[in-house]
Image: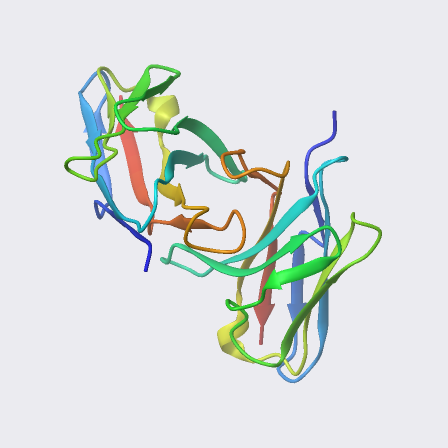
Length: 114
Length: 115
């Protein structure tokens, strides 16, 4: 079956522009996660969705970052007024509900802010 | 708070050498522990996991044992191959300490195996 997909795979934008990153989770996975992977760094947790609600937004680095999820499926991560420090690979993962379930990762979106 | 500390790389080994990548954790509850691998140009994929103390996760010749007494989950392989060249991430999930199944990841260890 299909895995987690993300689009676009690469995005180059100018400083100050807004960008939208999309994640399609595995069908039936109720939990969805966004992470950021900066060069030479580990994975930084951004936000978690259970269904369409986000009980944990603690990882969003600033109010320029927002995310939504509709229909318990597709999620969009929006970054407004992008800055150069936003350049990173943004990873999406999904899992079945449950505390010990594996997270399945998408291939990521590489964002470059010029 | 919860965290994972992972051996820093990069690590370079000759083919058939023994591999150990150290991972220790801090958690308030009873976490599950994971090793993820990221091959060049690919996304993260689960390598192995253990959900309780003394469990051993294993896959593709890799093993890791959940040691509660030393709060460790070291990754080992007896004989590495060139195809094992990748970045390895240790991670934990501690559902008693947060509102979701957030994973806490280490910084990753890059492994290069040379023929």
